[in-house]
Amino acid sequence: MRLSGIDLNLLTSLDALLAEQNVTRAAKRLGVSQPAVSHSLRRLRELLGDELLVRAKVGMTATPRALELRGAVRAALEAAEVVLRAAPAFDPATAERTFVVSMADQQSFVLLPPLVERLAREAPGIRIDVRPPPTDSLASDVELAIGVWIDSPANVLEQALWRESFMCVLRKGSAAARGVLDRKRYLALSHLLVAPRGTPGSFVDDLLAKGGERRNVTLRVPHFLVAPHVVATTDLVWTAPEGIARVFVEYMPLVLRDPPLRIDGFTVSMRWHARVDGDPGLAWLRKLLREVAPTN
Image 1 (tube, rainbow, N blue to C red):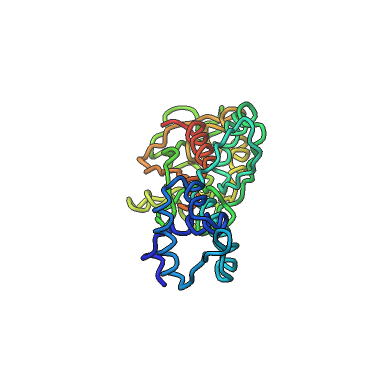
Image 2: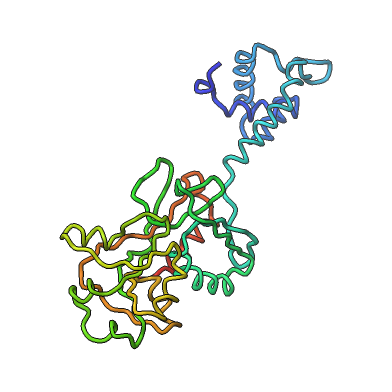
């Protein structure tokens, strides 16, 4: 038996007929005419190969096969109602929920302070559980991933948050911070490189290599938190994503300078599985993240 060839509305008629064991009352329960229910009963008898309801001394009575089907039919209809039920409304002011979000330190420094401030004012029952970025961009328990990607997996939706550019970060008052930072001077300085994955090279080094140039990287570290503290006490220059650079300049003795070379930026995006695209809570969180993200 193929479901594609069956009118699933017959299940609703069968449920009413088994509950009422009377065609007239079943029609009233369904809000349709008695002939329509009689027609459905004939189709059900043909489909199931059973009379389902037979005449008794008073009214009609269900056959053993009909009694056997009653629970299964009711369960099937209840399951269908769950599937088709509209998603409940999400009120951030009263909601109690924990969202699992993955992002690297670089995005956390930029997004979390303004996000937490907004949550405290607008959604006190909302909690954020930040996880490190998984290798496949979306682990099974991650509801929203924030990062930089070049691939486009199937069944994954993506939306840009902001476009990131680069700035040079230097110690305030250092010799390197005085005067014009041109290309020659930039290459003569000692540099700090943040390499979160431990891999050699970077946007800057790849760009310089194309022109046969290289910079003097004297310190390479895996974490963004280390970099500003080192730069604030040395003469190293750190060519950093502008978003995170501006965070540290706010409370550390650092200054920003435009890099003397044209470095392609990158886009920070958020990703989520297509299966949760209709989740009103996640839709609200995505909107909030767009609002607190840096503006370009």
